[in-house]
Image (tube, rainbow over all chains, first blue to last red; front, side, top):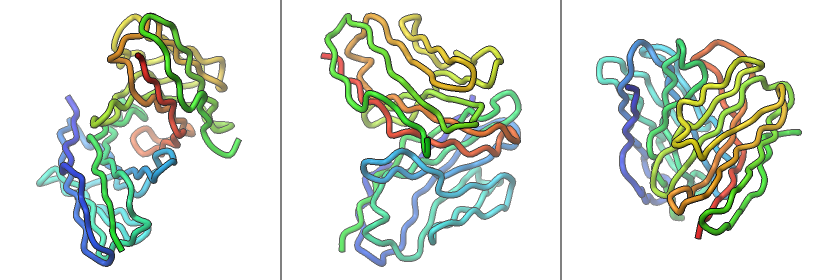
Length: 114
Length: 116
């Protein structure tokens, strides 16, 4: 079946530090890959996505590259801010009969200190 | 409305009671999803509605769980005879119909259920 494994948290960083949150997946076919973010007190929202191998998704200074050879979609940001403190979820959509059904990782809590 | 709306935001109930959770999707979104998030775990898919098609109920954990949706509007998730392991945040999402694996889901803030 389809699955997503995320780096365990929580992750605590100082402002302006470099961030990596690892994500690997198992899926049949050619899934689309997503990062969703949940800020305190808010619903999950899409951060970025990539729909085919070697695509790079980017938004708000975050980037992730779809690596089919390593089945990975690691999230990176060069310089984090306090406002980036949130829970980050990696997810995949296997398409086909899975239509919009997302398979999520367990989430990684990020806390950024001033 | 502007976003996906869920109610109640918090619900505390006694073991054995029935609960109903409501989701109001974004206007015009044909697809609606229910997910469950238990403490320290990822999101578990529960059920999916797409227009007038038969719903995908493959994620419902037991026959105590059911969901209804009228047309392309409000959905209600019902949990009968609640158990303590049902305690979780229940998330609703909606999406516009589009290319299957590429669609963005828009989530509500969730309904936190606590079963005593």
